[in-house]
Image 1 (tube, each protein chain N blue to C red):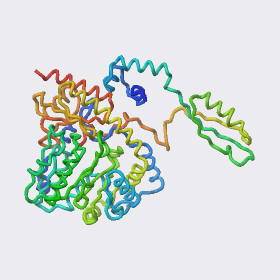
Image 2 (image 1 turned 90 degrees about the horizontal axis):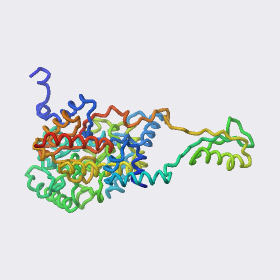
Image 3 (image 1 turned 90 degrees about the vertical axis):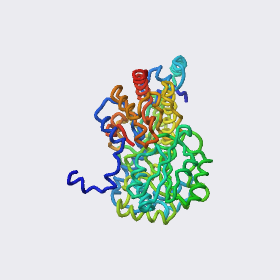
Length: 124
Length: 390
């Protein structure tokens, strides 16, 4: 992976000159790499969805199968549901929920590092 | 002397306060200071390990365990140590789960030292070695390491420091605070010396995963050493689990038995939830560890480059997450430099003397923090140097 892209993904808030220092490159090199990345659109959108599926023969419950799908965008997931999933024999209906952002897992907020303020500032 | 002060045991009264604690008191009053004084990973424990801990709690795993630790964990430890250190220990008899390496070190020393025995250890070193030795009424003998050896241990200096009555040699590579390593050729010489002088080696391997060049070798794996080595390791640094307080000791059965006697009466067992977390770390922690290690390596290169650019000579630490630049060019002592830097630029680094006299002229700067903070902190250090240099 491009080292510049890696830094961006690690989401540190660095300017181009700071990135250049971190990566031991010139500012021009970093700027050129960023332009290249933008041109390539390498930061693809990723969408995750949970799909409830009702099937035939019918069983009890609101839905019968639960699918987890990942796609490059809303359109790709929607196409998958309408063309690949709904067309399967025995599928009665689907309900698709798109995951926008994960705030909690197992009822716990996923804290960022900045919020972990109990650590001592100096330790052995 | 107050009435209550008189009750404190002489050998405890005689212990110096940790230099780190003194410094911590100053820094904690400065909320905006950038700290490179942190001796623990800045990463949060990987999520899968936290999740395993939550699951264990939900399942009601809240009781005592076997004094030695959960057998499931001891089996995982034995496998991990075999795969990573080429050392074979019996999980039922030769592995003891402890409350961090700190407890393991304490009970290892208490289990083997009689009053008046002498203990060799290399310096600058982790702050607890000398006090732990003194608390057993034994005598510490420090062996200085130097920047010329990139703070690896020089076997000739060990031989020169040895005197009749020496029973134990403590080793820790990579070293906190210097990041020093010792080459295999020197480890071999040390092993030979330990056999010749009938020394027991207590080896603290807590930073062994965080080594940036080559392969880590434990002295315990060298010929003739397994029977005379207590191998200490833990989860705090590699798996970012400092608050779990979980570590372990591996050694031949008579030594583990002796340590167990103290452990069972003082600790009973390590916390069960931390033991469950440790199982998950050993089973599935390798990818997260690799990611953290890559980040540490990049930060190391950055901070070392910045120190050298501003004229603070800094060797390339072979492991750990500490840089140990020389501050001699400032013309100040370690403590003057660090206090001045904190007051003038609000950047905290730890004076080298907090880790022993041979740390004089140096300071420890942890790169267990983001690139952004490293850049800001080193810029401020550079500004401070511009002010104080003639």
